[in-house]
Length: 321
Image (cartoon, rainbow, N blue to C red; front, side):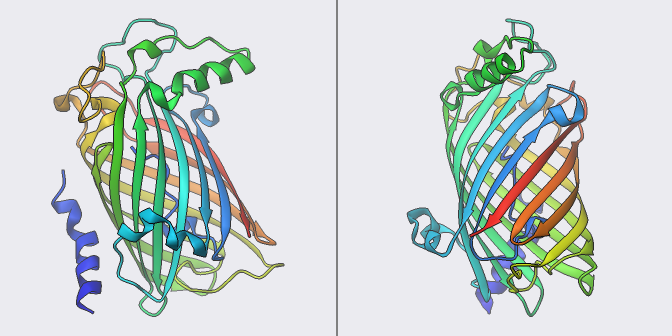
């Protein structure tokens, strides 16, 4: 009991203690009601008719009981609620300034950056008190070794689009090691048609130091993400969700450069980083026969002094296995 209280207090109050993992599927509005599934998440600002800032994210995820035996799973602290799922994911994220046509660094703009990392996570649910706790550890690389230049040039060549320039100024190679904890509590619910939750998150490491508080609203017809129910093979679910969030930023290597390698040709200074940002995500989900389909749009306020807000979209496809 004491350990459970400790974890809950840590997740709720960590935002008071801390001043780019881009894709997070551990929150309740991303829940899939099966203990084993594969998910593909693709995000791109093409969906908002732009090609700037956070320009693309690809996330491949597997949740299965055997992941509990994965070595990194052993260091994931959690309160051991009744229902627990373990997962691993591979993620690649790309960032660019407002123009990709210049070979010179655009001073006052976002630097080019790319990240690739393995994310190991656990989600545990208290079905009685309607609360969830998740922790994750991310290990990987930021810099040219992540292949952001090659990926963007390949996509633009395939689309017969403008050839990207400026990747010679990208954030240089450095290690990614991040640890994150999240806590959620259901506040209100009505059957299968409405749910209101509150959440808090704390993240620390070499890629991103960040804390957040937010809420999730689900409306439609869905299985509660705070239950251990397994979706039936022929079940049909459809719902919309809204997730507003306030973030407190301590460090962001995709803008400030890695913690250990200080040779990046261009970075944004700490004094120009926006310390408080607002994000919102809105999406539609359809689930049928253990197939999960989602389309969403995300918004974030300006992340640095001379920056602007940014909007991107994405799709998710998941299969129960």
